[in-house]
Amino acid sequence: MRVALFVTCVNDTLYPGTGRAVVALLRRLGVDVDFPAAQTCCGQPQFNTGYRHETEPLLRRFATAFRDYDYVVTPSGSCAAMVRDNYPRIGASAAAEGRGDTLSEAAAVAVPRTYELTEFLVDVLDVTDVGAYYPHPVTYHPTCHGLRVLGLGDRPRRLLERVKGIDLRELPGAEECCGFGGTFAVKNAAVSAAMGADKARNVMGTGAEAVCTVDNSCLMHIGGTLTRLGSSVRPVHIAEILASTEGDAR
Image 1 (cartoon, rainbow, N blue to C red):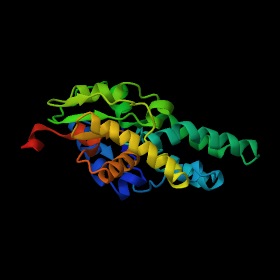
Image 2 (image 1 turned 30 degrees about the vertical axis):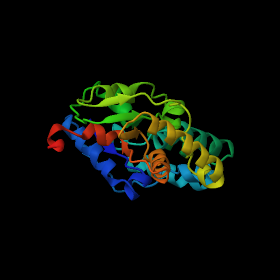
Image 3 (image 1 turned 90 degrees about the vertical axis):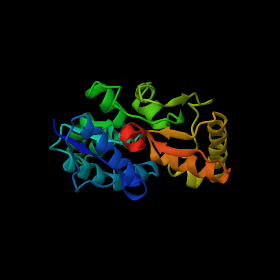
Image 4 (image 1 turned 45 degrees about the horizontal axis):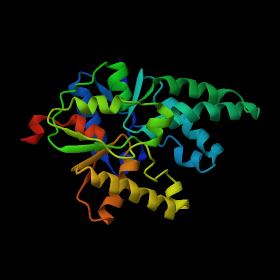
């Protein structure tokens, strides 16, 4: 199978270690991963802010960049959800405006091959024990896009439960939004901060050393809030936990 990494803007700019962790993890599982240099933003910030027409070239670029691959794997529930849930809507809207079906065709290329990392591991590779070792107490926050749009369900937890040495702790109010929501955090800063504080306090109450999610955007928000509250809890992407081995610990 031909597999490509869609690293996403947030990871490429702020969290490159997450992208490296995905590659290390998949290669350990026998999957050869390419990185198409033509990839760029999926268009989520533009689309969520109401700029649908400005998103259309990014849809086309995504489909072109990844058209030669069987699977596109991304360590981001929100970006995977953008492709799978919103690309078809964009194509349908363009067609309804009489601007042809090319966007729908591009979406049809992109949607079926795009997987969030934990989906790919569990559903495609049929694996839950990835040979990881992470001897720390950890709590898991299911992000909104992963939970409500992609329907990741228990896939991330099943993977975490098989990590050697981990002490996985239940997060109170786990399914409540952390308050980030992309541009929501900018336009509704006070509400976003209050939601983030609630989430951070719940994280701290678990006694965990680390909080993990499938989205670094949410981790950025939760981690920043934890820092402002004086907490030492580390935000860690699930890919980095799954990529860790006993050799790393030594």
